[in-house]
Length: 410
Image (cartoon, rainbow, N blue to C red; front, side, top):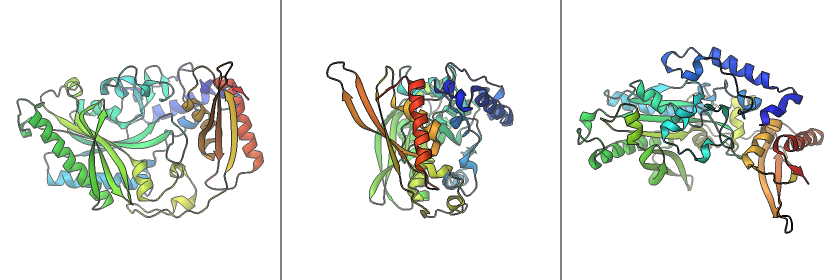
């Protein structure tokens, strides 16, 4: 994998391992909330791991905990709403959890959430693996069963999540999610002796809608909303909530009634509950008018100093530097996946890449070899790029495509 090819640029395997060791040994003060993965040093499996130094370096950033950051403001607004809900109904006190380490087992991330063995999310092309049994969480739902087994019946869990994905203004390999769960006192259900009855499921679903519609009003104000049927492996029935905002329908979250098998695996067969998950970046980009997801990671004072804790203010662009396009054409190697290419490009050029776009797909009529051409748009958010540095980055990318992905350049 790409991690192995980084040695000659100084970003070697041992450096990545040291970073993991630092995180796992200093992030160990979370008491009973620490996962098993966070309680010991973990050696990154050099043959399996697809984690680059760029990704490992994001683990300690915790943007959602930085007071005044737009992501922290959105998080605080949602938590504030559920604190009001808890005050109105003391029976369910929503606990806010935001410090769980992102290293989880594949059992937590996939198996316990009923993700099928052949699901695309389990592939190396989509998920960052530490070793064959441990990953960087792809969603905060990875902590759902852990927290339910601890007896928590109402909680919000927020954290950074990691996915190998395309590169554009709304996709980034690290982003932030919030998971919400409510487990009912069986006596509250319409049929306490049968928590999976149609009446009980309808009761749980209506309670879910009431809570989340209230949350949306707390964030967006009095907006039009609609519920859309959806599918998630871990809820049934499943629903998405959309709001009509600034002239368009915006998907806000996914939710549903927790699958019976998940409840049973947590010794909760006697009751029922709901869960939801949402992305903080998606909401912050809309509410703060932030046009590019890379900006959330900026250390430029012109970005950071625009925002105040607890306030939603519109982002004022401070620059728009010109783009620089570079194309790369190659014969598609066996096993090629676009996410591998995007992760490689991001590892070389970091946030200097704005988009990566497939602009040509050609099959040779005689050999049946497939030729692909991708356009890489280099653009800094903070300064002008020089032709020399873009050419150097493009050269590094082309070299890594040959060495790491087995591409035959054209």
